[in-house]
Length: 222
Image 1 (cartoon, rainbow, N blue to C red):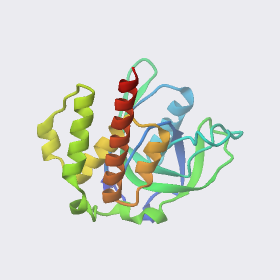
Image 2 (cartoon, rainbow, N blue to C red):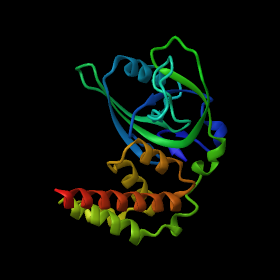
Image 3 (tube, rainbow, N blue to C red):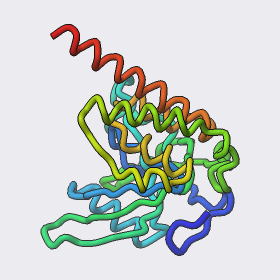
């Protein structure tokens, strides 16, 4: 796959050491794009360092059930690496960037570093499938995904651009909905760790149906 001007064909193409950006309930997936507004000094420094090297950073979620460590919140072991494919300075001390997802990774260990941002040694070997074309796109139950999405929109009096939805591939649709869904950290992590697109779609539908059932239960108690 390509991210910007760089091709990533296999796990060996991903840098072995990358800076990581712990962000709760933020999900990046391979081939998807994530806009980010960077304003904390340590993460401004992280972007500066990434732009001077591989332009790759790792999006990862804090593990909210684990105690914090000396370097900050304990991290989940699995995240997704992304390449900075768009960058702009705002003039007021912020960066606005776009990350394009490359592949998921597993943390091997976290490095003891003097930089204000955290860095990890990672491996993408368990996720070699992320570097090629999606092999199970035709196995996705698109009707189920769209039905749950429509039910969510109706329950919250929302609308969407259905022309764009209808023209999206199964991978684009499922990954976009997974990234945009207003789920918590545990649910986002489950979507990230789904073995393939079919499983991610099934997880997305199940989580959406659970959310709708909880919303209905809360409404009935009022």
